Structures are given as C-alpha cells and as structure tokens.
Image (tube, rainbow, N blue to C red; front, top):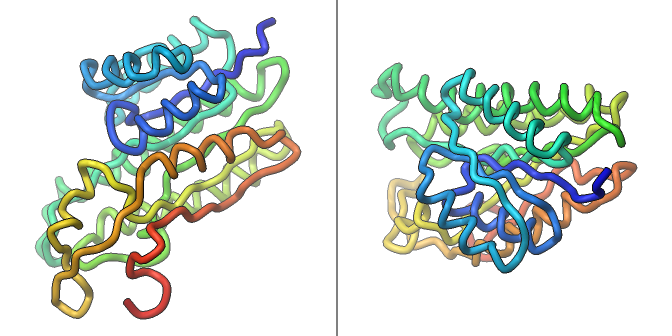
Amino acid sequence: MSQTKIALVTGAGSGIGRAASLALMKADFTVVLTGRRKEMLEETAHLGAKLGKSLVVPSDMTDPDSIATLFAKTTKEFGRLDLLFNNAGIGAPAMPLEDLPFDKWQAVVNTNLTAPFLCTQHAFRIMKDQTPRGGRIINNGSISAHSPRPFTVAYTATKHAITGLTKSIALDGRAYDIAGGQIDIGNAATDLSERMAAGILQPNGGTMVEPRMDVTNVGEAIVYMATRTLEANVLFMTVMATKMPFVGRG
C-alpha cells in the first residue's frame, strides 16, 4: 500500500483553506480540495500543481448528502484518509444580537458547526477501519473561540462550540489512534479580512485598523500540526498577528 498521506481540506478554494492546501501539498500530502465553487478549487489545484498532487471534489457543506458523497469519493480514489482539516466557515451580517434573523443564525450553525461534525463522523469511520489505523482531525477555531467581536453572536457561538467538538474528538479518538486538534487564527491576510485594513468596530464603539499577518503562517502551522506522529497531538494552537488587539485590554 502506498505511504502517501491523504488530506481533505474543506473551504479549499480561497483564503486559509487555500494556504493550508498548498502548504500540505508542499509537505507531500495528496490533498482533496473541496468547497462550493469548482473554479476556485481548480485555481488552488493549479497553484499547487508544481508542489504536489490534489483532487478537486466540489461539495456543499450545508448538505449532508453532498458531504457523504465527498467522503465516498475520497475513499474510492485513495482508500484512506490521514488528515481532515475542518476549515470551511461563514459569518452573519454584523448587527445587534436581538436583530439577527433566525435564517442567518441557522446558516452559520449549519456551516460552522454541523458540517464539521458530519465531516468528523465520516472521517472517524474511515480512520477507525483503515490500515494503518488512525489519523488526525484539525478544526479551524478562531480568536473568536476565546473572545467575541461586537455583533458576531452566531460566529462566536459556533466557534466556542468547535472547541467542545475538538475536545470530544481528542477524547473519543484515543481508542482508535485518531488525534484531534484546533488552530485558532487571528487576522490572517485574506480577502475576508480586507475590511480590517480600513478599520473594524471595537468594543468601545470606535473603529481601528487592525494589523494582519501573511496567511502562509497559517499554512505552515497546519503542516506542523499535521506532521506530528500519532503519539503526539497539538491540541490547541493560536497563530495571530503579533500586534492585533487580543491579549490584554485592546
């Protein structure tokens, strides 16, 4: 059997997912690239073509059947799964907590919490039964898993919940050599964080231009977590812009 390591990255078409996918390809993983937009996934695959191998499998993280098909295609193609990076996520429009529509709340919960849970279930089933047994599951948490921003109740609640999912993975996976960890990322420079360059709302009601960091730092951190032997686990890692307002009181 081939010793090639197989990774699956959700939300691989842009931002953190793309950076992680490229870094994993460079580290000799074959990466299953998944997300909603096929053209963006193919762009990631093209960017990584000289680094390593990948497979584009579009999927919808809000559709349990689509998720099931994604994992079925992965096992059919490769016969195993060594790493799952639960990365895909969305936010809701910034507004007072009491004004957030239920459908916006539900969309964030479905994508940020239910989808990682379903993906983890499929990964567990594969990793328990494969030879060699085991694997690693990394969840994309957030600085918001520790401390909220104003008007982000849905995103913050799901990221706090991801921490509970991570701990359950680490605990329930012990018997099967499945390691679970979480990376909490602060202000990586991606399209989604562009607004920080123009100023973002602070708890005191003012706005502030927040420092950001190169997203390649995140990709390299994912590789570090992913390449530990299964006797070792990075349970939590925080990678953040050095000067962002998180530690202390702003």
